[in-house]
Length: 177
Image 1: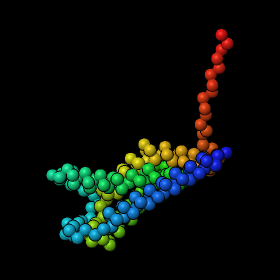
Image 2: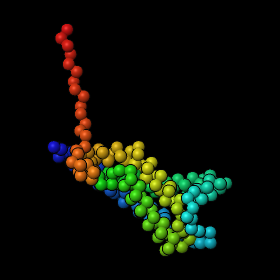
Image 3: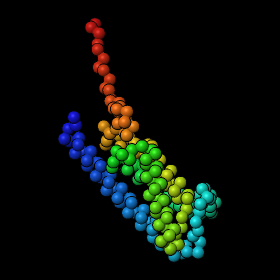
Image 4: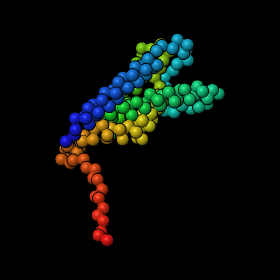
């Protein structure tokens, strides 16, 4: 049985994660759905994986390449880092990836059809997925397991399995001297 203090702390951490995710989402929407009149003539749809990434890497401006590639990776990091902390149902690399890909796909389609000077780019999906993995693998999973320790996955519930309990090491007994 969890103590009240532990429950309050977990609820607080989940609330802070939700607020941080909302702020990140607002920033991403602002950045990606802002019209770019200067790019109207040069924006083009890219359906070939890696094409835009190679184009960015071949630019003489390293700053611009880092900004484009790093920015698209950075869009996915909050999904991997914060989403599993908000809800235990989002824990798992596949779920994080699918959620990230779905949201970024919706953004890319909105850019393509509704925003002047923006277009669909499959590399943005790939880079956001890489960002989600970067956020999930080292930190997101660890934090999620701390915030939602007793959560069982659907397949564990189906098979009737309980998650393994962490066992404390047994204290060593001193032999009488």
